[in-house]
Image (cartoon, rainbow, N blue to C red):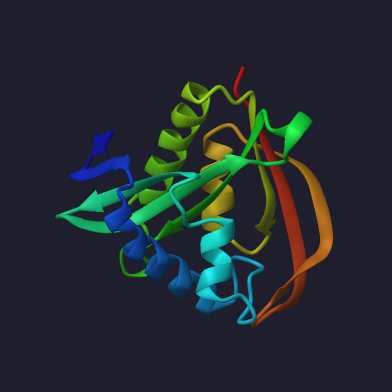
Length: 166
């Protein structure tokens, strides 16, 4: 997929270092994901950033500026629903990269045979992500009251989003 000079393509093993640094920058902000300082790089690589998961990257001028990772939301009888993590370089947000990644992830998930996408834990103060997910047809199917301890705002809700892919 290509738009506005941004190319979205499958990640190569050589891209994983850049994906890690995107992830770390976002984690260090303490406002988007529940992973805190107790999670090492090794922990995150076991969970998310490895070639066993589907990883696609957004590239602009030969630099990885965004990525998403897909894997089954649950094992066994729940593996037909996909879960995802998205990250965009914080220095160039607002250029529609998140929306491009979302659109690509929906198409990739369909191609991989998933029947739905679920985001288990979207922080309610992450207005940009919420707008992107809703613009792409995701619906809020649940709220976890006070589910996220926001670094600056204290306890805020976490939202669960779903989109059928059939």
